[in-house]
Image (tube, rainbow, N blue to C red; front, side):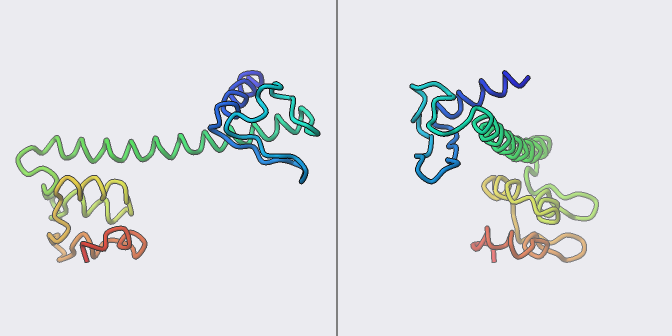
Length: 150
């Protein structure tokens, strides 16, 4: 497993996908393929243990970015499945409480889902049974993403 992480790290660093910050002031950073010609351990003044620690951190950061992307894709797929399941009314279909998918996304603070719904023609001004619009349910941070709705 460690060997696989090491190999993946070397590939990411050499491909320039990940930049590894130097440990010492006089070293130049590795990135955009720099330092790969000398081999993964060929950086001046950096032990193989330090290199492994830095590349392991770079791999953790890359994995976190992949996980975040997967969450965004999952949100978009969920919104798309709701919209596709309701062909007659699409993204403005109301549930038992008069809420549209946009109301639900706003209540849970799902910015990506709201962006997909808005682009798909969701009406952010429609009120649920409690008289709340989608905009009413948005947090101030989410509202900032949709200034045209205010």
